[in-house]
Structure formats: C-alpha cells, structure tokens
Length: 72
Image (tube, rainbow, N blue to C red; front, top):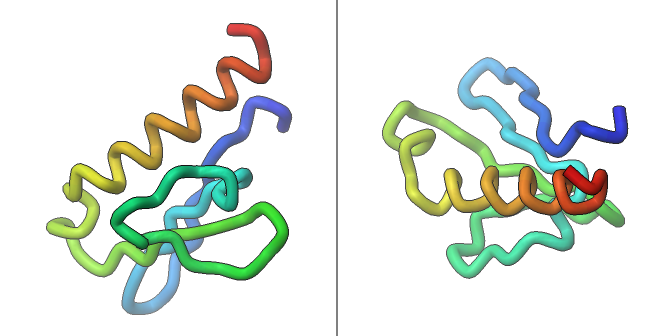
C-alpha cells in the first residue's frame, strides 16, 4: 500500500475523492475537506465537478509526492 496516494468512497449523492496525504497538499481553491492528521477529501457531486482543473492538480500533486517518496 505504500504506492497508494488517493481513494474513492461512494456516497448516495456524491463521491469522495480522498488523498492519503491530503493535509500536505497545496489547496489554493479550498476544495479539501477533513480534519484528520493526514487524510483529506474532495466531494465530487457531478461530472462538472470531476472535470475541474483544481481537482486534476490535486491528483497530480499527490501522485508526484508518492513517486518521489518511492524514488520512481
């Protein structure tokens, strides 16, 4: 599981796109929610939400962090 950087949790009216080290991610748009020590998530309520550039940036940042941590 050391390669994991994100997770998806389904709810009735939205999907949580979560990040294992979300508390460390830059989030200028203020999309990340949560109060845990490390985990943060974004509520995705529509296809339009999922297509937001800010969400893609969070995914790329989380993936980059994992690759660097693993030396890939």
